[in-house]
Length: 312
Image (cartoon, rainbow, N blue to C red; front, side, top):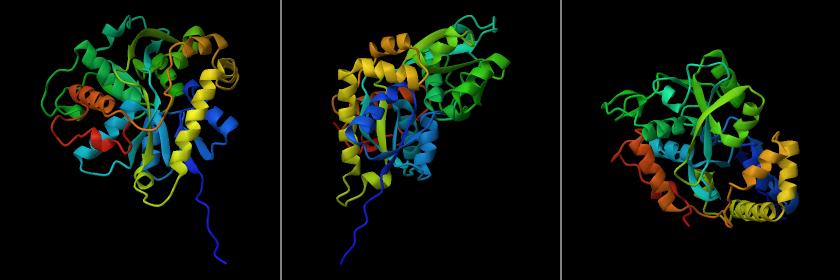
């Protein structure tokens, strides 16, 4: 008698914020068979986990995935993962925050040359620092300068702080001057008077993508786990769209957001009907922005199409 071994459940990294609500619904209502592993420190930490074989799939910020894959292409290495799906269609609003008692920081214009707090090098909070600097005209051409390649560093220091809690503490202690984090996640700390808002910036692209480890996307066996995951996410998104009161209840009781903020967020977010596949034009636009910001070099082998395992 021949015994067969069932493949283990996929290990899926996600950020435990309001955006994760459809994932919760997929698990609760539609039998999503996956081990959900929270990464409160964000996309940069998931990149490390994917490369280390600790997770199989990551659901995170577009710019973090693209920046990491682009750097791997420049180094002619396997990035450890590929883009397979789209999780959020709408752009992300990054709030720009400082400490409550930092009178010298009056506006975003005060931040040129300041110390920027980031969760990790390569994370969304790091990448968006360069996008902000590019939009503000702070990127000064200086061939070979610093980690930005063709651009001089727009800030005096990148202070790596890992978690949102430590970022909030750093702008109040003076260890960092400002940081950027998603608007609604930041808002409750403005309301409490813990940090102060000085501005905002939107991503010039749809904000969340799904990636899978290289081994998983290259598997030529009849492994249906990834397809099942994406199908169940579709059902979780449909449930989210059709049950807004349940979404507000979950977000306001389980994820530490007020019901009012959850309701306001619902007006701004747009999930896809189908998570399967990634639009190459979106990734090309992100690559162009990262090259312009100096985070990726122009003409050094960066190829948006090769980052994508499943195109729309």
